[in-house]
Length: 348
Image (cartoon, rainbow, N blue to C red):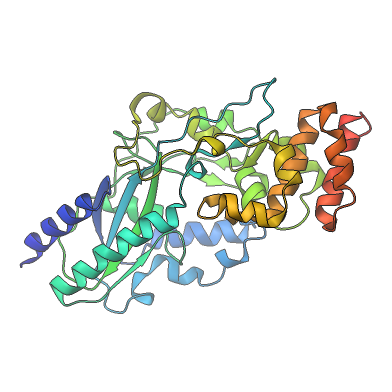
């Protein structure tokens, strides 16, 4: 097949595998994004995510990951299966980001991307590598260059027909493919809805998120104790945060439910009872949530987050469970349980 025929066949295969979007960019280094990443790291916006610095130079140059790389194929899958996580004063459930209300996207997308890469390598005779948020790849930047979407002011990839409820993956290939027209035009305009709505002012500039202020960072990526001055801002979020996406006009007007059912929402993940999470032993936690994104925060982190949600809820009915937790073997759980008790009792 010539490059045009191979490209057409590749896109047809990707859509048949269940991807909602696919676009191809040339593999020249992302010079603009390399500079932006360097500035972000220099300002310590990555907080304790030291892995962001490791191999940072590779993130903008795919040839360092696949010698002879000619193209970067970006794929996207709609995950709008879960419900919007709203905080209700009388609810006993803490909020969970929409993407975490079903199967772990790393597995779902990763398996399909590997199938796509195997087909492309067999068809073209050229090597390929795949990534799903697991390697040094600037996935949103490559998707923007390919024309798949644009990076919005909330730093998520936005599309005009599906909004930002999309999960991304990348396929690096040495095969010669036809490149799509890109980068995508920006359509945020003068809108500042996401910046205005962020509960912790984590979006410090359009497209720039400071992890040290971000609810998703603290509830998912951070290990150990969360600084006391950050806890109130987490509100009742137990895993992640969707506020900047929930208020986006492109999501409100143009997003649509996923057609494949690959990320079908689990009823028990449409919010979590923080008291139940706090009381759960590790074996139960693993049995119940294995294969879901919640495993990223780990059992210890989820119980820590549960304490914060209970403290922010200021529910006296939670005191018995919190008092049991101050005898826990984990010092981080003990610390956060004590903080929650003092908040509920009006001492903190």
